[in-house]
Image 1 (cartoon, rainbow, N blue to C red):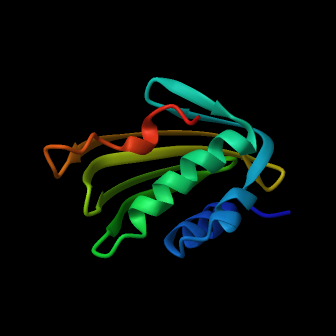
Image 2 (image 1 turned 60 degrees about the vertical axis):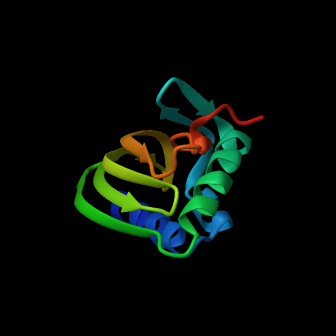
Length: 129
């Protein structure tokens, strides 16, 4: 069974490679993902979320910088910043709960600033339909 460090490292690697299937493989079938204003439950809900997020981060010129990564037992925390052509991400954080080699819960928040007057911050945070 994978450790919390191994699960997190693989998840981040897949995210950096724009590998949707790899990102989703880290999650349990009953995952709960907390984002500002709501929670997403289960693989279908987080798939829509990550499709949109990966699409934004796959654009030319996007960058990601890990500022802190801590793991304690079943819990992990990351603090990061990023730039995409659409948004600036400041003080972005994710907290993970890993059990039996899968992410069972995650929370995310960030200060997201749109770079264009017509852009809304993080369109992928809108309800997944």
